[in-house]
Length: 451
Image 1 (cartoon, helix red, strand yellow):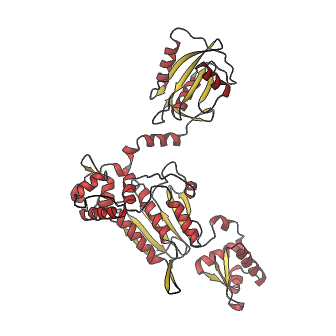
Image 2: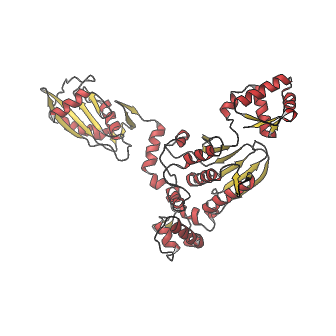
Image 3: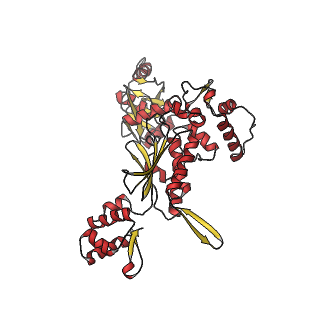
């Protein structure tokens, strides 16, 4: 055992080992940090450089240390405290186990271990840990729906759901079981009370209980959310909202068709698979405690799908184009969408969206958080906000014109820029070289459009 301690000292301080000349307040902060990470050992009587200087041990010393640790930690920590003789000198070894909920305080403050140092957690980090600790109680879809009874459940919808999942997931379930038993098996009835998820998914009148659970769709004129051509608000249960939103989009984007050989090939302006994935994600992951609606905005040059609330912690937008875990804000809703094969619980949905857009020759979708909400933007053209900002003022005018008017010729460009033919052509050629616009036609019939 002494040899093991010597090896630890020789290796030096690390994420799992801390040296202390004496037991002080910093040692208790380190106990909080170890508890909130993966545990570790504190060796008291060893200098930062690894020299064994020893410590004086009196009657009741270990008991006083234990009492001090318990008094200044919350929840109380009960580490293993032992005394060791190394090279004739006494040291104290404090073995700290990781806390299950990672939220141990020292002197009323939370700490974490990063490398060989202990740091005070930020407010956001600590709040996230508390939410994780109580997430089963706090998750909206798991809470009881006040005032809801089985009379408020659409039995036909439950039965149709059962038939669908039996087929899609090859489940061996009795199709004759009652709607109540189906809901119980899905954990949508707990302690004989319907959950919020039950009413969101299978309510006869979902908006009676959740007026905010609606989905707004609008087709705007041009590229600004000022004047809309069509607008609809969809209620009903979450499955209905998903289907209605997709149909609205199909009504307001173009469908191209061409004949290849004897086969007719149809292609939507935006890949329907990616759009469907984004809508489904918005419904599954929205914060239903927020008094706002999911919004789908269709413009001439793009489509925006606005969720309600930020991404589930600890995800950030940059994670969504890489490998990442599936983190469900509403696990009961997610489970039912999974059984319907609307989602897969692997965190690959956003990756598929990116691949599908690129396969169709479109730019990658933009994932971002704005005004506290998660936003997905599908773009028709290659130009991004970043590349737009890098253009000169004349080029920006040309791009803005093309967004509104689809195409531009040289004469129109001269008038737009109030400049000579040579300057207008130079700016058009520059944009073409940047692969932001394309040229079509010959001679006097040449025109340019956004790539």
